[in-house]
Length: 265
Image (tube, rainbow, N blue to C red; front, side, top):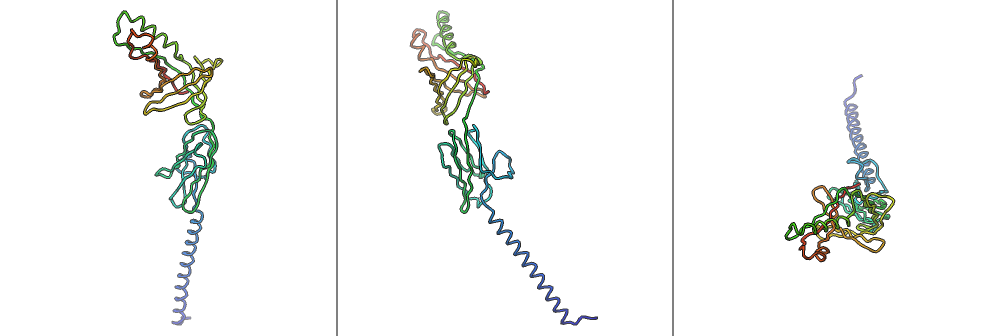
């Protein structure tokens, strides 16, 4: 049976209305999903060392004995701020790539709070004792005078022998236990002998590009080493110049140094 013209027009109107209604529902659903996502778009913290595509937010970071750590920030509005509740233990800053750079200063626990304009997220950070160990692999002595001659060679050799005897020998182990950023306890194993440890405290100081290690032994004596990095090697240098200038004025000593080349264990 042939449909009447006004029926055709009515059906076409309903079809058009249905399309509009369907589009409105889809748009509404999409808008609703977007709003839901925005509601969940809170600041999240991820372990930086886990890779470039972190999948699980963290609320605790154990730095162990590391002095530097990192977190990736995700979510939020991109305008981030960070605060540590104990900067004596842990301090932090956010770089241009939205990575939190964490610096541990001493043993203990702290909380880092990252926030944007609307939300915040926190992570607890624990720092345990940092330790470093080095072994002496070579010992050298340098003695220089204004005028080396055959007559003063014997005296120069005597000075060299004395300085060598005052240096720690090959296989000696330095084991540093940091209680703070630049100080702590030190145990020295002369010649690598584990049965005769020498206990001391240490303090590391810096003067421009020079690094000095002050060692205070438990028996009341002290040492001062200058740490030098030459190429890829590290050395502990002890300066005896002033001491031997006073003891041997006729030698006219210009330099008297003992050197220990050390390697990380």
